[in-house]
Image 1: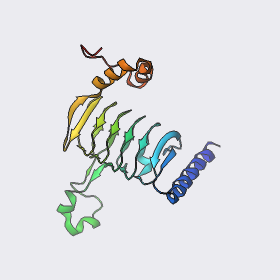
Image 2: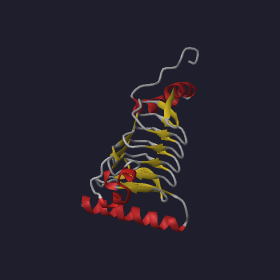
Image 3: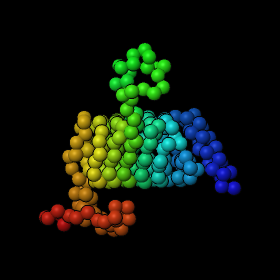
Image 4: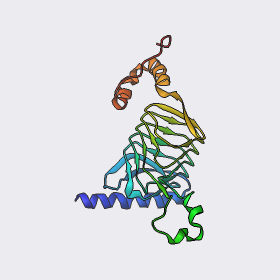
Length: 206
């Protein structure tokens, strides 16, 4: 019965994607993960493309905007609540050096040297701005923001604000969140449920 339900969700998902394209660019609600789990609160654009979908480890409440490319070939983990903006590129492999080394033999070599591969992980409730590019091996901590058009490579802590080409840490989202929670204290329990604790307000901002 569980297997039938899995294939039903997959069939329905494919039907929604195909039918939605008749009406143009749209967000498609619901996503069937590689293990058959149906993520009812995840929304992915019908214009975005996922390579090696079976290697995509994704959790619920994720949003992936229009015209984005997600390469999960060498492992891509998107944790709960992440939002990925339009025209974003996330890549777990890069051939930029190998094509120069091999030249015309590139297409004939299956085990290429200097062909860079590494998994990517995006921590829960992080926001990736439009036109950002994440390179192989990138790890972004939870609650982070990547500014639009940023080029991201490397490992970053929780709650980092990243910007630039290459991206650098320019701030901490907890400072903003502390001010916002002071204005909206009724949201504190929701915040703590995923973050584990509440951010501390800076002196003079309580």
